Image 1: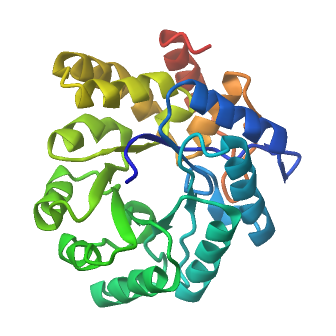
Image 2: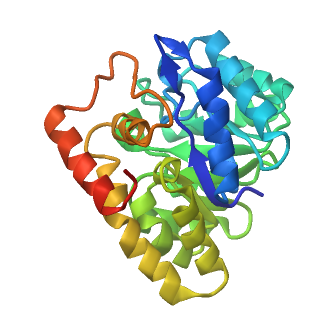
Length: 290
């Protein structure tokens, strides 16, 4: 259902408030450069420091600006199942085409707890839902066997696999068959994950290089492996630079360096350290982004 180059879009701020004008401009930049779907309020969108009102507003702005041209997949995860249900309901009411739900963080639920959490949200909200597994941030790993159980639910349509493990992604693909689409959660393994059966990427790098990320996915889907490999290797350095510090600090700095929004992030995130900013600037100059 959701496939291709999907951007986890940054949330631009201006003097502590959401910069609605810049957000709309970023949406247009993505659509103009071939992005297949947009995720507002994901990790890269600093969802954890948005108020409930801001969260709803960001989704509303993106839905309005997209105007049905590509799918909008709202980040609606929480470490409270009740809260995740309510946020997902709001996203559906606002017109989102799907929801991205991160595994509950801090609680460290068992696999049974994870299963019951996702099943409860899927039972409560008739909206296509994407599981989001990123144990490096949440402290819990959604195992392939649990994913396979969840894949039986008609409202659970995909998983964003951000373990960085091709083995785990392959196990999910082997267990779930055609019941669930697998999307890469890490730009630097999009190509190998698609080679194993993945359907695309929910990308950080696409915030600054949407045309190239989309071209990689399109080349693979067209069977042009030589071009897909070329783009995979070409994007590797800039994709790694997006994680020189915690996401979204580097990518937001990069978007700012391109003149597209402020580099403002919310505490407890801090601005990119000067030494790392110098490295980022040098790499962006190599790519002729600035």
